[in-house]
Image (tube, rainbow, N blue to C red; front, side):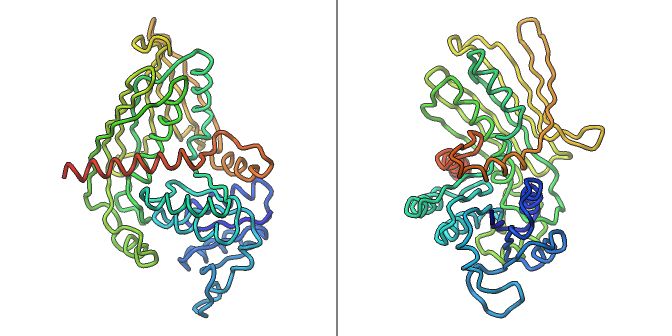
Length: 363
């Protein structure tokens, strides 16, 4: 198989490494980025890949700026790991080239207008688009889903604490809401649909905008792609009330680029679906926890509230590898349920837009 990886930053490099682990030769991997420095770095790490700065036009600016259209049109697969504001334009362009299977980093677009533009094009081209919410591939999440299904449980309370210290980080960012909060929210979104039907939700959010990004890096990203924002939020605080056919579920979420250390925690209260007012379990899920041997694992602490019985479960995994493998297997006709399809990705963008709208109305 031949596959395009659009965006050769940190995430694009992770995907190339995953493809190599899945026995895809470097000569079958095609890299694209508008940043020559990232192209050069990728070629040093993966000398066998082909690279291109411009997908169509050849202006003689550099050896990587050439007409790549015919090579792109010969591919079935593409992974979009470009800057967040560029996602929807890249999907539209690749779908126009005839690529049938696209895995895009979250989100699909910065707002629903952009998502609708994507939908129009992929409906016309028949392109299959999946969004990369890698936490879906945590075995810890899968364990809780199976537990809820087997025991007839529903989510009745949820909370998210998610973040890291990005002060002084040289990498540009579209903001905390799009880079961080969506991960924990995505987990809650999976669990809220277990054994109950969502009728609607009400969102209240506040965002903070202190100076925390590296202005030179952010400015360079904006210069290369003018859709990249110069002013981005550092922290997000959201309260969501989700109405289902069985309960009103309160979810509180806080994420930030101003934490002293990385934290990725989702806490749950689970009740019997036939008796939502009687909580049965409290669950704490911690993701990407450093182990003493230099690795990472996802961890669950399950407390049975009656009797305060505690069970601790660690899980090792390679979520990006598992997600990439699931994606390249899509043409076989077996679609992994952990892959986020268009409708769920659209709802994620609607949530982010509601948070921005709530913040703006309050301001």
